[in-house]
Amino acid sequence: MHDVEIRKIVTSVEEIFHEGGPRANTPQKRGAILAVIKNPFAGRYVEEIEPFMEDLKPLGLDLAQRLLAALGGDPKLIEGYGKGAIVGAAGEVEHGALWHAPGGYAMREVLGGAKAIVPSTKKVGGVGARLDVPVTHVDASYVRSHFDAIEVGCNDSPRADELLFVLVMTTGARVHNRAGGLAAKDITGEDGLR
Amino acid sequence: MSADIRKIAVWVEETHREIGKTITPPTRKAVAVAVIANPFAGSYTEDLGELMEIGAELGGLLGEKCVAALGITPAQAESYGKAAMVGENGELEHAAAILHPKLGAPLRKAVEKGAALVPSSKKMGGPGQVLDVPLGHKDAAYVRSHFDGIEVRLNDAPRANEILVAVAVTDSGRPLPRVGGLTHEDAVGEDGLR
Image (cartoon, rainbow over all chains, first blue to last red; front, side, top):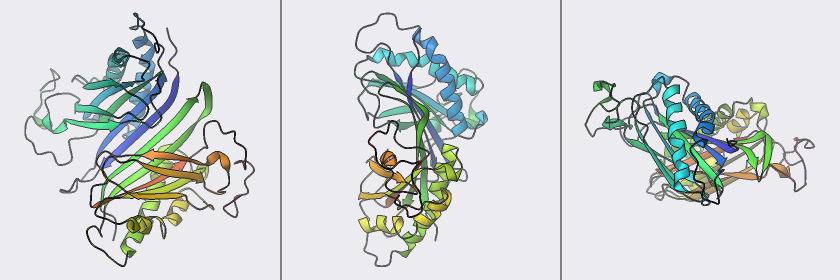
């Protein structure tokens, strides 16, 4: 059991009105939340790290709830999601993998049982490192209009002995999506794929 | 004429710990950004009045976004700042036209009072470039604990014909201020300086 020692929480929300094409009736929102916490395994190799996932569950839930609130609070309006981690330089990329279960399942719970796998990315990086967090549709991974990414980062994070965990959510497709493929209105939404 | 806004982004950061010490309550900073079309991109225009009006519109809009994102009353705002980054087909003077003539009054309304000069910075830049927004106490510029800054960056802005306009508001100073000088508690806040 390790304490989850939070140094910083950052929330960001973008509203996209257009990107050179027709103005959207409802601007798409893209939200991200970052938590910068102490890495309890920094500076040495620790074999047994898996129990920390359990310790991270309340943080996952808190971040998912905060992010949903920042996007208006209605789970039905969330159409895309993703997650990621940047591990400070005194850690290893495996520490970032600890976020998969607590981050992903927290979002799926807060969104009322979203079906699709939560896309993710991770890396080791220094302060100011940027991470392009992938985004896909919450119920059907193949929905082409919702493939997207949100760039995140924070100028003073992660320090060498820290972990930066990220959750992202969007309220809709890319603003001028027109590349065909499976449309959100045509999904079955049962297997998480189509 | 009102601004052609392509995108609005709002960022809030909370610092819970710094160098091993718990910050209670966490210090909080918000910055709101609008990405707008530059009506004067590509050629020299003598009269910049249209950008001055856009400055007035954005001062209120972005100031209110920050206050809302912090979840505070306007009176609880403690410091502020503003900045603009002009895409490469514009001119540095375009940033000046947005920031200096008319942006301040509606921003001051959004944060209630605001006797002090709004600290500012400006530059030319491209997508993904960092803009550092200076912060100073809103009623007494000499309050030393509130000299700070906040970084903004949007991976897709400003494009060549755009301007990125940022307004920052906080409800607190630096996390662990201890370099003396005038304090928030001792400031009179009438002349904008002390």
